[in-house]
Image 1: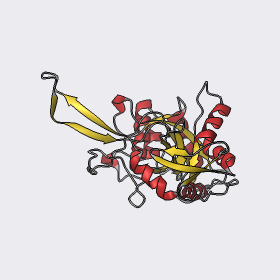
Image 2: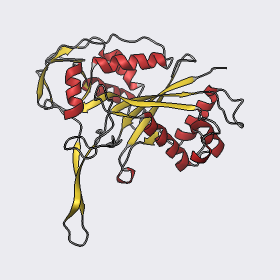
Image 3: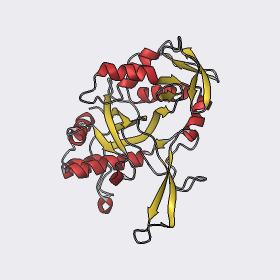
Image 4: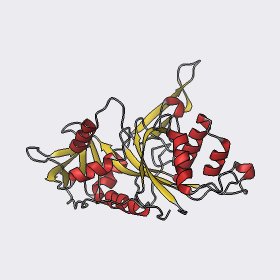
Length: 307
């Protein structure tokens, strides 16, 4: 029996995503969650697990399967732990404005290295293209010939050829769930034309400067003026951001599913959650249409791995 079975969820944001980070950060009243050491945006595993459980509630998933996967409710929490292990949703591609064309999907060598490490931890095999080395002041793209400098936000970069761009496009495309009516080759060509690698330091800057911060105003319906304290600034990840999340299943601990192995449980849980559509609402402001992600599932070719 396999002790632990892994999947990687690809999360492609279709609407802005606000997973609140708690305390005020400078002028931002409601910042998003970030990794402490790098400052990169993320969605903590607890928020991801909550989003998956909320979807199970909304879809009316069988109670025994839900308790087995996510654990009992608070009053019975000591009965047993849930079998699903849900990691943080980690950033992989960030859309950044460009003065020299449509926006660009930006990443950096440090993010790609971590993605490779997470794939290995989850038991995913297969060839991994070389991770590019990018000098400050330059970017690597698929076809730099004939292009002038590339502007990202207000910064100018010199484009350099990225020899393994096609291989990386294929690897990243597996994390983007298809959409009926959109041809896969068109999605591939779009990603290939937008994919851009910058150096780690520049990417860290974009993770602060290129994240939308929107003002919100609460109007008093009687006076038609702004209520006291009714103006706040909220940060959110933009649409077209690509994140990924390692999800694992341990052997079930509940009586009903005790004889089932982890692979079967993970398969049943995913079917129950996504058979009706590859979508998941993550973070706050659901009633204003925020937080909708398109979910792709990438299974490990080999059993095992460590969570």
